[in-house]
Length: 298
Image 1 (tube, rainbow, N blue to C red):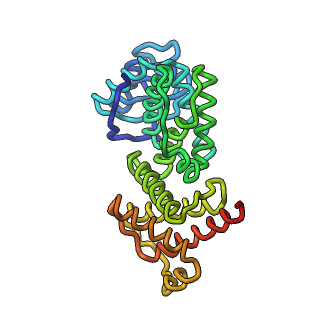
Image 2: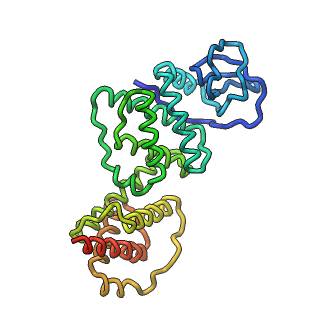
C-alpha cells in the first residue's frame, strides 16, 4: 500500500546554496540540507551513485521543497516502493503537461501524481477494472488535460509495460486540471464534473434526447456549466442579465427551456446550489443548439 500524505509548507526555492545529501531516495530524488534546513530535491540523476554527505549537482535540480518530518518519512517510503522507471515517467508527464498547457505547476502535482499512478498501476496489474463514470464529462470539460493524460498513458505503458486504459487517463487529467486551476483539492474538480454530468442527464431526460458529445454545441454547454459552477464555488458574481428573455424562450423554444429548467433544478435539488435564474436562459440557448443538431441527424 502506498504512503499517503498531506502537503504543508510547500515552497519552490529560487536562491540556492550548496546542497548536502542527507539521504538518497532514488536516482532522481534526495533529501538534502540547504540553509540549515532539510528539503527534498528532485532532478534527473541528482542521486545517481551519490552517498550521504556528498553534494549534489545543483544544475540538475528541477524542484526543491520542504515537508514536515512525517511527510518526509511517507515520501521516502513511497520512493522505496516504486520502480525508478515510474518516477521518470511521472516527471516526464509533468514536464509534458507544463509545456502543453503553458503553466508551471506547484510541486504537489508531482507528488500527487506519483502516489496516484503508483496505486493505479498496482490495481491494473492485479486485474481490477478501472471504472470512471465521469470520463465523457472529463473529455468534454478538459480536452487539453485529457490529451496530455493520454500521452502519459502511452508513456507509462512504454516504461512500465502496463496498458493504462482511457478511464485511468481520465483520472490523470483530473489531477492535471486541479493543479492547472490552482486548486489543492481534487474534490472541487470532481464536484464540478459530477454536477455537470447530473445537469446534462437531467436536460436529456426532459428533452427525451441524447446530446451528441462530439459536437461543438455540446462543448459549449459543458464549458458554460463549468464556468457557472466554478464562479459559484469561488463566490464570484456571474455577469450579464437575460432581462425578459424568459417569456421569449418559453414561447420560441419550449423544449430547450424546459430542459434547462430541469438542469437548474437538478443542481438545486442534488447539490443545494442555486444559480441565478438567468442561467436558465443561457443553458436553454446551448440546449436549443444541441436539439437542432439532434434533429438534423434523425
